[in-house]
Structure formats: structure tokens, C-alpha cells
Length: 143
Image (cartoon, rainbow, N blue to C red; front, top):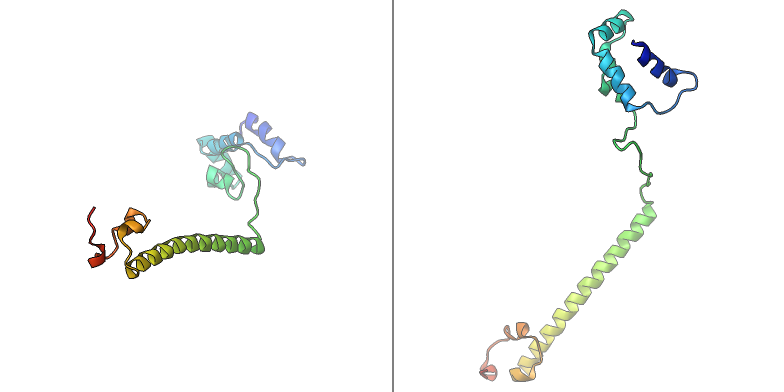
């Protein structure tokens, strides 16, 4: 191994080692292991040169391209998840209740106006719903 690389690696394999080995150091080791000199020296020590490729060197380690890890957010507790789902169901129910109420009131007015024989100008309802009223003899007023 080249002396500069050996000196650089001594810091990480000594008794007081650190948990982080820089990517550049691992890349240098990987590149050296693929040279003819590196292959010969590793094979002379009965070591497999393929064990020093980047994939092998990075196997099982935590890496981050940004070189910093985000904070760990544990998954929500089952009770919190159940409470959130309950709130969602209540919100969906409230929205459906509002929509059905508006539709049913509109239908009731339309139905009542037909049964009470109201003329169209007495029915204060949006034009959209008025267009779907049945045309009978009592609704023959032209505009």
C-alpha cells in the first residue's frame, strides 16, 4: 500500500478509531486495490482484491450524499394513528353531510314547487336546478 494511503488509514484503524471514514479515503483504497500493484500485494497476503471495491467497502454502512443525516422521526404510535383516522372520517362525514343536505333541500324545494303548482317566477332557486324542473301545464309560462 502506498505510504500516504497507509498513513491516512492508520487514523481509522488504530485503537482510538473514529466511526466515520471519509468517502475520499474509501475511494482511494478502492482505486488502489484495482491497480496491478494493489492486486499483487493483496493476493500475496491471501486477500481477495474484490473485497476492496466501493460496493464492498460501503456494504452495511450508513451513508448520506449530503454528508449529514436528518433527524429520525419514529413512526406514529397506533393510538395516534387511530385518532388521526377517526378525525379524517369525521371530516369526510361532515363534508358529505353538507353536500347531501344542500342537494336534498334543493330537491325538496323543486318537488314542493311542482306539487303546490308554484309558478316558476315564485321559485327563487338557481337557474341550474330550475332547468331540470318537469314541464307541465302549470309551468308553461314563457320568458
